[in-house]
Amino acid sequence: MDHPENDSSYKGLQVNSGVTSQPITNPYRNARRARRPQLTASEYVEGILKGNVSILGQAVTLVESTAEHHQALAQEVIEKCLPYSGKSRRIGITGVPGAGKSTSIDVFGLHVIGKGGKLAVLAIDPSSERTQGSILGDKTRMEKLSQQPEAFIRPSPSAGSLGGVARKTRETIVLCEAAGYDNIFVETVGVGQSETAVHSMVDFFLLIQLAGTGDELQGIKRGIMEMADGIVINKADGDNIERANLAAAQFRNALMLFPPTPSKWRPEVITYSGYYELNIDKVWDMIDRYFEYAKQTGYFEKKRNEQAKYWMIETINEQLRNNFYRMPEIRALLEQKEMRVLNNEQSSFTAAQDVLNRYFQLLRN
Ligand code: GDP
Image (cartoon, rainbow, N blue to C red; front, side, top):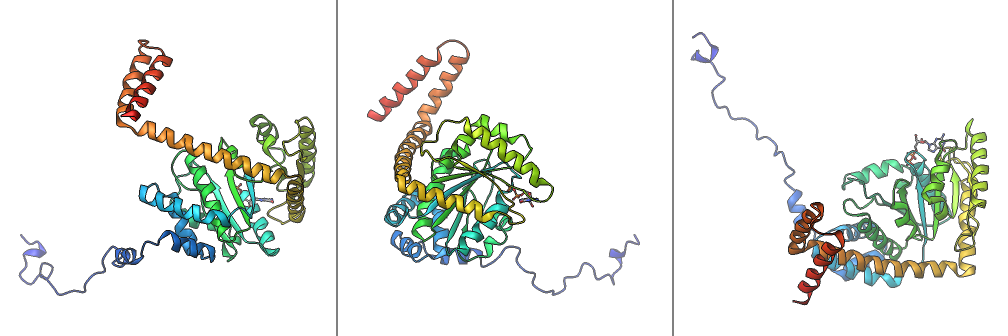
């Protein structure tokens, strides 16, 4: 009864004219989106060839898009950029998380720019759930480099199979080269299969290792060492220098037991410190010498040709697989067959044959 709202002089329920509150969404967001016209393939190419970073970024987004109309346009842009591509050094960089990839790429990148180069840093990380927002994340990872106008940093295309992610990165390389980036770094986390994918798109493969973590042996087991053209042992600073030198000797010994690389180049082992910027020029000198060697022997050309063939076949494989698995009828049949195989009513091989036969039949109709 004596609640304050029952008092006739209570003001709380009266409507007062107030101030208009701000909308909770950005009112310009859609308007701005709508205003950005979709560029034509030629406009993309023109922008890329002029080195326009914003247009390059948009073109990469197009490459990464899964929408069919984006893909068609992206392929047209890539085709038109192809004649202007191929002139860069493509360098793969791998190492376990914490090995110091970001720190090292930051200083390697500045070194390259200091010598008058332009650098694109791409990544392959199929496990990543990264979205557009993480570009910021990558920029903070490579703090100094991201402030350089000569550097273009792009995180891994997110989502999709390793094959799909790798193909997009490979296509992005073409666009970056056409935009005048004469050094391309492709970074990957050294766990799993992604380093094989990176190896198939770079000229030089750099493995970053740490002293005394037992990675030496893991590396040998996984065959990553066999792919490496250079092994660099990071964090050779302070008390760690001794251990890094010891690890380097172990790596050199281990490498001697390996069969010669296809290029006949003997992979080198160098200790350095990304954080304290020690021996960076030594690492870079090795990479320079490799390129000189590979170009002289013709291996550079040969490897690139092999990679081009590999990517053609990979693209065919991927599209065939997608075409097959996306057919609703095939998916339904696969489900049925799976049951039969699990119930021991049919062998895996005849079940597979039945599904394939149905697929070929569908293609003929
Ligand atoms: P990533 O996961 O491979 O990208 O590794 P980061 O570059 O993020 O480095 C992991 C940690 O190692 C960070 O705390 C770095 O500061 C540190 N670190 C990187 N390089 C060096 C180095 O040369 N010396 C030392 N002492 N620490 C380093």
